[in-house]
Length: 205
Image 1 (spheres, rainbow, N blue to C red):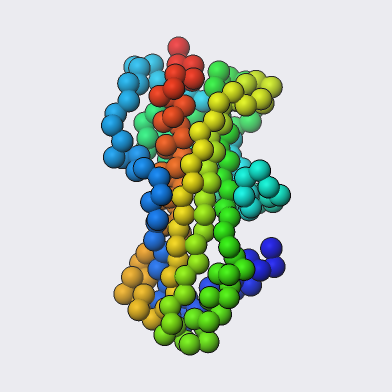
Image 2: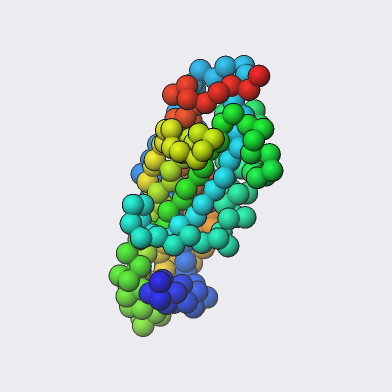
């Protein structure tokens, strides 16, 4: 964790003194480019919960609770844009009103130690030698039963690469926030699409 904080500080300092631009690596299909699926007139409704972790799935991870509100908003936006659900709620008090309970787990992982080293090199050269760091995102969309047991899931992996260097000043509009948001939103849409297309969600009455 200390290494990640060191890199964050270095990234901030160098972003102020040189160019910083982030790019989606597009390792997964684009939701907008997928052929339409047969969605019935009665679309499913769902209670949705989210979790954001630092670390790789199936390994030691740390949940970042301060990301929950932001991930709530990002997930809501992704689902509304997808048009796959008729209704969604993230209110715990309304959980029992929905036949479908879905959890969105987002994992952020990457070689942060190496990223810090490359960033340090770029800082020493005042941005003349570009440096890059890649953040990997694994998104798991899980359908749960009323007891919280997993019934079905859809998992995708994608990444965002952030470059630091003088040559990236003209591309400074490609911010990390935009690239990460669009990457995760696309993965969430694909996950919900898999559940809907697989016929595992109960349609709203």
